[in-house]
Length: 177
Image (cartoon, rainbow, N blue to C red; front, side, top):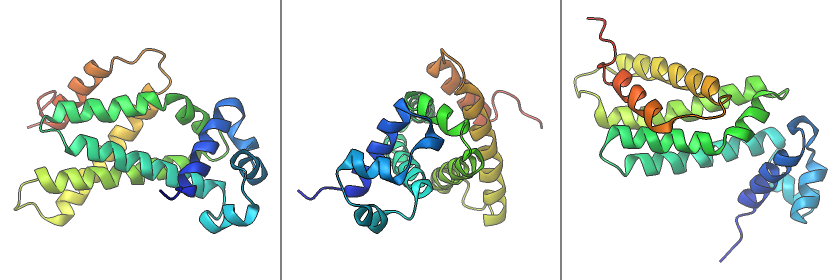
């Protein structure tokens, strides 16, 4: 079975980030950790930011696939939140790095893509694309904001958070009508 070099490089980045300041990780560090040449690194990625982006996209796709595989929206949210909680340390380190703005943008786009896929399945068929886009944009900002806020909590009650988020998204927590 062929080796997925992108995954190897991304895993090395995460491993290094657990021991080292994210801003101090260099291409040289990744090349040495993977036992590859610089040329191999640059064949797969342009720079470290692209490694971060690819890693986030892969994690989001995996999380989304798991979430879409369940019928219960609250269970899907629980899967999503549990995954974010598992990656809490790396998220915190990325948010405290010089790349914070780019990471927030990547996180937003990754979650927005996932929300759009979910919304296409769940939204009423007569909803215009413009309205769908607005709703997804709104919910994405809310979810990203909450995840960033809660990522700094030591003990996150995943079940409670998923339940509250499900109530909010379904309009049962507060209904402004």
